[in-house]
Image 1: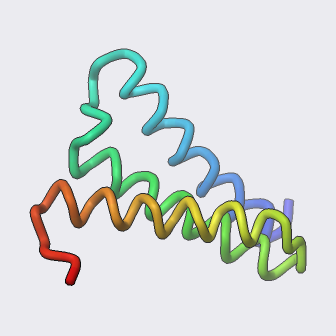
Image 2: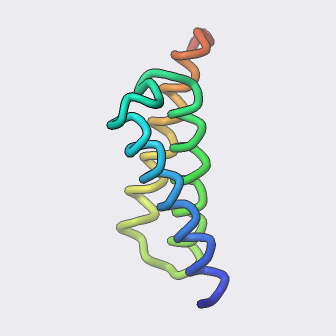
Length: 81
């Protein structure tokens, strides 16, 4: 397993952990921790996708990161103007 595999697996693992915990009602889907796990996870997956040059996942995971960041800002009631 190389560094790309480790970073990508950690990122995807965090996204799946957030999803599992929310499915089991252990984490609120609109809670800060849910968004933080998604931001870190999708950010790591984006970095890995960039490193391997796989652009469809750069777009997917980059968008996931930005949407999660938006959700965290809303959860923290940070004005977006």
